[in-house]
Length: 407
Image (cartoon, rainbow, N blue to C red; front, side, top):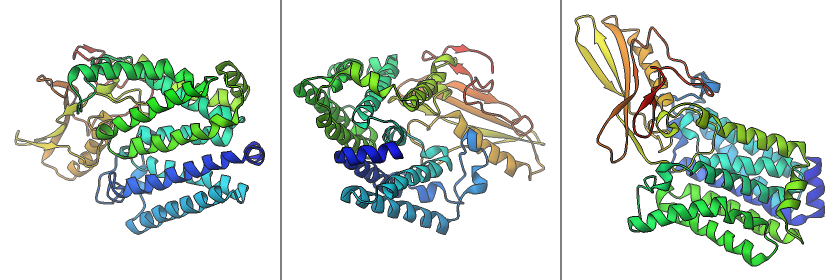
């Protein structure tokens, strides 16, 4: 906190960064009240989808009145924080409020896996850089560089390069294919121009980023591009603060800080499991729970549980939880959690002798279904989920639906 207070005294323009980060929390409240209704997702009548690191989340789920009060408190603190940052007043309190807002947001997200998303992941990284890494005028652009460059690496994937990941197209197929390759050039090449000596080159790449996020509006709805456009304003604040821009200078100064090195190592480490775990992570969901996720091609699934009775009859129960997004729509973790709740209900029915869980999947547009999960007697052989190692009950499907590993 001390280093940030000193920089705010020397560079008052950085107060605007705090204002932007506060506004992002207000935007999150609006998102949670409209497109991703947190009051419904965390309702006592909605089955919980707990994170592996917080598998007892349902026990801590707040009641409806408490949840509304917490969400109101979150919004109120965001307004107070934004006001303090706009007025450049009470730096200690303003900084503390950014920490409190970040902690509250993470607390909400930990209550249910369906609340995850890049649109929360990226602001969290930017906020941590602002709060913890010295030389903010350089550290913040470096944070954007690392995030965009990492996103470019994640797009070195046939789903992206073929254009298959873009399901709703405003332009002809050939132009879409040109576009996805240009985004790759933007994130792996032109992004270096954030540190260009000449302003015209910086603004050239800045405009490209703005256009990219405006285009994504019809693909990701309003919240994600709105958050990114808001955060990009930070680059306009930091650009005039450095007289002589240089990537080498920025890299050297920023990574003199052990905190910068630690945060970067942690960030990179969280991206790796999706590469070393077998199978296509977009299909299996494994290895990317704590990673930055590119825009995948849509995966379709028909998850269901089969209840076998003593009289050898069976009932098939479809698993269709509400409020899923593209990233989690067919994630085995979601349906593992729901199957656990069905097991609690089935245990009260003495006529049920076995419960099986099946999750067939396919990419949108494909005709062939393949079993991603085919687990038998799950109520007696409880499934467990590992974040960073393969889960034996998830088939290791590849993009062509070949299978490696064991059931």
